[in-house]
Image (tube, rainbow, N blue to C red; front, side):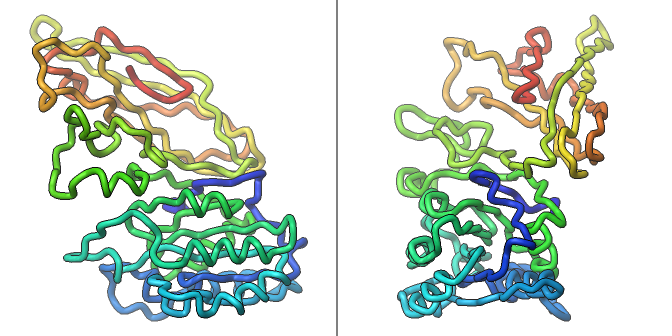
Length: 355
């Protein structure tokens, strides 16, 4: 659960209700793919719990009919719509639809680089078919499997909730299924910047410069990218019954060394779990340098827009309040173009940005 990221959750579609779910359809090329879940680097697993297997196991004591339709019979390549008819018929009977989509090591692997950020083949079309066939009000949840970012804009239009699972390993289904029904909860945050599909077309994959370069190169990663990302580095939602509120902070700057040139910083942040569910929270603290850039500065020496300078994962009991202490690295981390930014520090608690 710590690595699973809730990307979208419209109208509190998740968690699902076991009591209200009489018939559930598990569909998609990734819904029952054991090999995919192991990713590129893995040994021989004794057994693998897939998304489908995990849901069947989790609901075995319930009076719930579990249907399965792969839909894309050729796997993630989904080169044809053969299999869509069966999925469509099953969707018309379902109270809930869970769809496993994404990519696998036939698309991304060592010595196999992707040239696009789109979801392969007709997978998105399958989702549209399921949406059209489902009775009105039927929640559709998409579990996205991938190692790297993909453009999910079309998926988001058809799905009520979207969860990124990466390649969750041999116990993946046993983790994902309870989360869907509220017997666990996703608490992960993205470790990557997710770009729109056009990024791969507009930016040469042979240009590895991090910094943006006028007039058209937007830069790379959360530190330098000047475009509007699909999802930011650090994005991750929570279920409504485990919302965490950042409500107070204090910063202490201690100077030491010859002429007090060295600075150490300690930050205390107060968190409150306002929900009824125990949860984890990953506190991320970013440093943003002053916006003013020296006139003689060249693009290749421009400072990053922001840098992650501290983080800590903490557990919060339902209704509890805790103080989180973080040590910010020494003043070299806060140096901008050879000048210290310590004297311009401030806290923006709503975004947890150290400026």
